[in-house]
Length: 139
View 1 (spheres, rainbow, N blue to C red):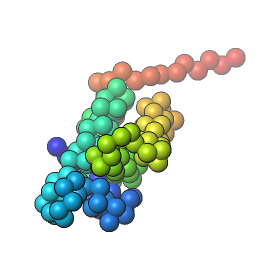
View 2 (view 1 turned 90 degrees about the vertical axis):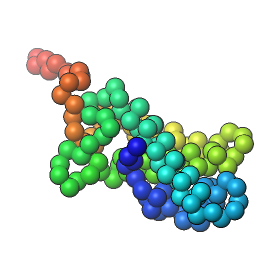
View 3 (view 1 turned 45 degrees about the vertical axis):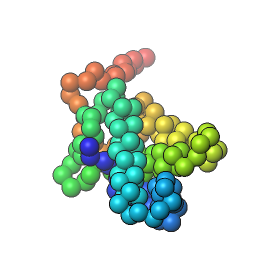
View 4 (view 1 turned 180 degrees about the vertical axis):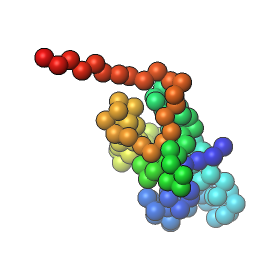
């Protein structure tokens, strides 16, 4: 599965040492296990985004609308933040802390604004999906 972000995006957001610690579930320092776990976190985050965007106007998986522009920094950031939430949740046996619950909620709120058309992302619109239209009445 492809992702919208890379390991470096997660590390930039949360710090290299923090990401490494969250991903090192066995506390062995095994770089292969750590890299695989970070990849899984990124895949989970991308799937989360795709699932949320499924009922919106965009083609899923999200595809850049212009050549060379990518899906935009907003989508990359969503993926990185959600990957961090997933990694942190693995390390904790209880509920997410207030910080990580807030991170997840903030991403969901941002995706909702995109879905409602308040904010746009530089991704292809799916012409086969129903588009919400608003009638303008001049009085």
